[in-house]
Image 1: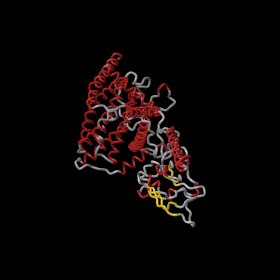
Image 2: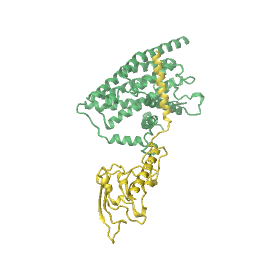
Image 3: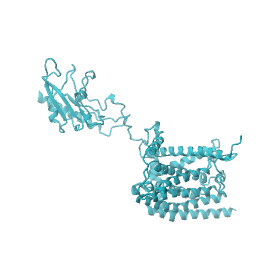
Image 4: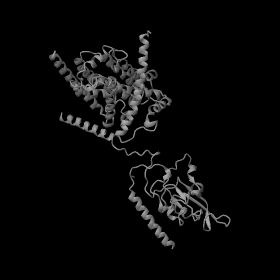
Length: 327
Length: 198
């Protein structure tokens, strides 16, 4: 039987979409649980056993809520913005490989400039936030979106520079090529500085605590999504968690050897290792959120431009020199 | 530079603290399914007691009503007739109503009562949807004949009665000994009262 390629891609996409959405739902539950435990609370435990049906209850609540559009809003952009966030957040998964076997990497599309495409797509995500805040026609969302724009520009630079060290070592821009280059040694060892810079900038990229100045509920009500309600707010919410998942995937692929097993434990399938590594990063995000207070805005910018960018440049230059000397 | 390194150390320390808290024992009592232990003489919902022969203890003297600082108690007494003897004495309470929304659960009615008829039980779950349903009359206050005579104030069970559900296995935040002290005070008051009566 000869099935056309596009049908296979469609099926793969549908399955992946389900997996990502389910992961989002339970990542949200896990976050509330972990935050609860760290604050000596039990976390959600009323809906279903151990609170496992909480995501379904939340989804039902968001769908049933009224979808408001402020009078001062630009209606088209206001309604479009959550979809920009969501679409860019999801479309990244078209090129992220989750494992590999003899026939190649497990991804919908294996792009040979994968990492560049990934950076391009994730950068578009900020448009959703900026436009959403701008089009709300209200002061707090506007401040939130201005912050989003500035924050994204400052942290995107450090992030990209921290990638380039890995690209120099791997000698390829395809994601499975980068993972295959880490069979013997994960890039976290030679690129520990790059890894730390990436982790910090990734938190800023996804607008999470301590860099959540875009939302900053203590100063800006709810930042860029102040005016959003119901399902449109839900879309921003999904996008935020899917972005968390994306940066966890990227950190795993670039620095923690992707689906390569540590200590030669190859009897456990690679995809399991991949999930374990992603879960670690997701937990790390929740952990940070429970621990750190929000940065002040000027310090955030100063940290991005005066500390992270020079460090990333230094890391890049040193890596380049060493690779050039080794030949 | 040293200051920055110090900051990194502070962040790591903070992370270790939150991580430790993740496994710490949580003080949460999951209330509707588990209940907190009370002090022995917790003041909750009132109860009108009976004698062992089933007669009401209340003699309709209205001392509770006049002792009540919140004016929550309404008593209308009536004479006992040879045909219907509700209580051993001459009079009984024809109507006995407590507005539990006005009540401040101070227990003055309990102390004022010469026959130990009105007592405060440790029951506290009285929530309802209408204000009117907080006016408890004899139908809800009086111990049903099949349920015994009601608990005398000085033989109060420690905390929650067994029929209220599972009790949390955490030590109460209220000092239990203070509760026993209150019991002791109650005994003194009672002796004084007996002295006055005798």
